[in-house]
Image (cartoon, rainbow, N blue to C red; front, side, top):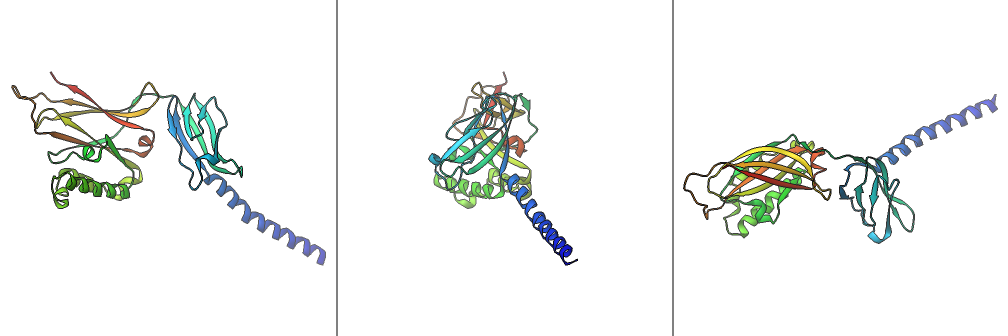
Amino acid sequence: MKYIKKIVTSLLLICMVFSLYTPFHVEAKSSNVQKKVLYTKQTISLDKVENVSKKQIKWTSSNKKVVRVTSAGKITGIKKGTATVKAVHKTTKKALATYKITVKAFSEKEIKSKITVVSDYSMQAMEMLGKKYCVVNSKAELEQLKKDICTQYVKVGYGTKEECKKTAFYKQLSSYKKSFFKTKALCITEHMLPYSGQSTEIGKFTRKQSSKGKVYGQLDITYSKAPSGMASTTVVSYQEYFIELKKSDANVLQDYKISVTKQK
């Protein structure tokens, strides 16, 4: 009888240890794999491995016919399919990062988005920052952008920080709350109009791909007719475009462009 009790006790202990060990193992394994979508001909850079020199990393692809990877961690979609890309430490042979890449055939399509236009003679935000566009993914990034804008506003001599905060551009920035960035991203771009006070008609925002494979978003706009006899003015008129889109759409776009159609 004592012998049977010992066997039962041992079996219970083994079951307890196994039940504790198994969930931990599965969770750790799944959390290390990142999923990414890539289009054919598109090239992107994978996340940098922290605290590890580039020279100590070897990048590999499980299927080079689907995904090609360089020694710097840049991947290119070759054809439709899936592949696993890994970053392995050359010395320890330890896997530092693992990506499950799904490659899809590219198709041009209109992206659902909300676009707000802000006209402001006293603000050309992207030009002041030296950028074509700016993508904001979090409330923290938004607050940093607001600070940078006001700093540049003062630096170029447009006015004080308090005056910057009174501009239509700054007020539009301040309208975005933390909850907005849970599922959406914000792209801000701008365009200079050839005539003071000229308006534009907003068209489609489309996902496109360049001949070299770069995936970008294109905003179509149409100029209104300039008043009869009006010549271009030295008073610069800028329009800022606030493009609100899903993060899943923003994540695949590598550039943002504006296509202009001029009314005759």
